[in-house]
Length: 74
Image (cartoon, rainbow, N blue to C red):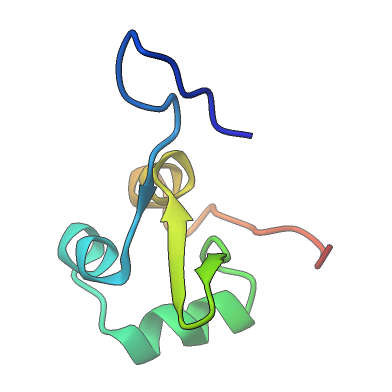
């Protein structure tokens, strides 16, 4: 759960596809291919036709893309 307070932004803000693409230099299809293989963080559904990613998980992947493992599906 996000920590939303009046003191500042959420502790782990969500970022959209455009920002994920900008940060990772990956295309949409490559991102979803990596998600399916368990090599990229899964998206969080935030609307009927919109998803976003927890920024901390994307930055964790950026720091060590070859070491990242999404673990077993929930």
